[in-house]
Picture 1 (cartoon, rainbow, N blue to C red):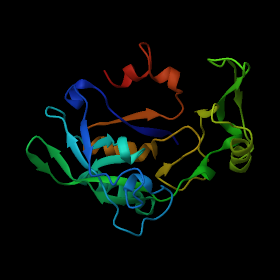
Picture 2: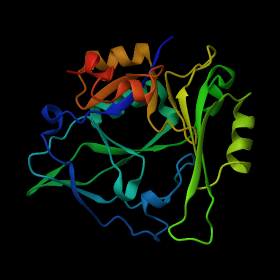
Picture 3: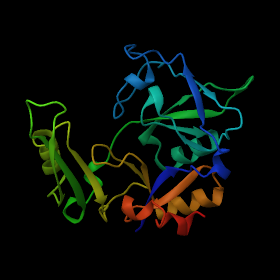
Picture 4: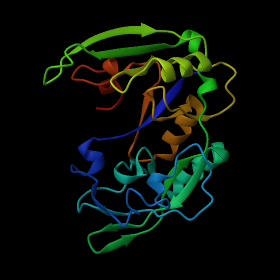
Length: 245
């Protein structure tokens, strides 16, 4: 079974050739407990959160899929039709909240922001997956600017528990640990899965779901094969060019 990351297209022909968001308005502020961006994903929201108004640049295209960013963090802005498909394949994974959108003088309805209710780290086959560990340590504490000693290595973990233990007890704020060749367990029952803390923030879909999304002709999505590392996918000679010209 092949899996694909769902990513946002930045092709100018798809996006309209300019930044999507001009500004966010009324997002609740950094300290407002009702602001959606302040409510942790992985938990059900039991209140009506404050969702900021998305002011979209004139000329930017409203597609079926966007990464929100800004005060909402790593959430996705999706169309009504894509929301329907997400719910069809795995309703229990998501909460959806309507997003107020303004473009020029026009108010646009029918868009939603996602809130992930649960994550699926136990669906990673850690023994067959590789992670890239970047370690950085200060070596010149008395001096300014400080100097650092950096090292890199590939690591494999026994399971989610050992990965979590390493992350909590070994990593510092200077380090990073990123999945470069993640494998999904053969027993995974879910057509759509979500991860965090493993260096993958995209939604992951089974090939059968990807093909249905392609048949639906959703605009603004790209499908990145999970087995292809970042450095092989992007860049001037990246494999992405074989899929999206």
